[in-house]
Amino acid sequence: MGLWDTAGCERFESMVKVYYRGAKAAIVCYDVSNPETFKRAKFWVREVREVEESCKVYICATKKDILDLGRSAEPDLEIVERYAQGIQSKFFVTSSKTGTNVAELFEEIAKDYILNPENAQSIEDNFITLTESKNSNKPCC
Image 1 (cartoon, rainbow, N blue to C red):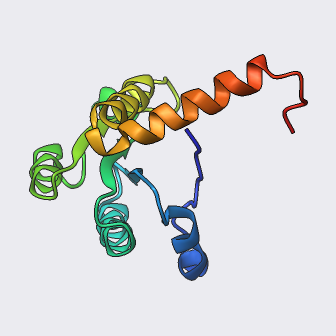
Image 2: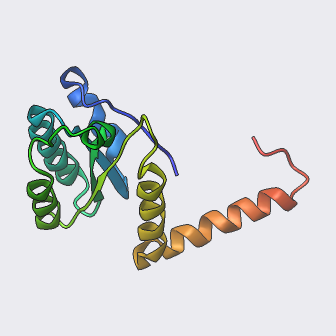
C-alpha cells in the first residue's frame, strides 16, 4: 500500500492529480471542529473522482478526541454520514492524537481492495513478484 499525504494545500492542487492517478482508494480528511474543512473535503472528493472515477473514497473526520471532551462536530456527524452514503463512501471518525479508528480505517481499505474482483489479478501479480524475488539469488534492487 503506497500512501501520499497531499495535505490539501491549494497551492499544490495542480500537482496533486499525479498522485491519485491510478489510485484505488483515497482518504479525504477534514477537521471535525471546522466546517470550512468539510467544504474543502467535498472539493477533494470531486477532484479525485474526476481523475479516477472508480477510486473508492473514505471520508475521515479527524480530531475525535475533542468530541470526547464535549465539543460538537461542525457539521453534525449525521450530515457527513449521509453525504458519505450519497457518494458511496465509508465514513470514519478518527483521532491522530489517541489513534482511535486509525487502524480500523486502514484495515477497511485493505479489506475492500482485496474483496474487489477487479483487483484480483493485481494481487496475484504482486504476490508472484514478491515470492519470486525472495527465492531468487539476484539482488532485489
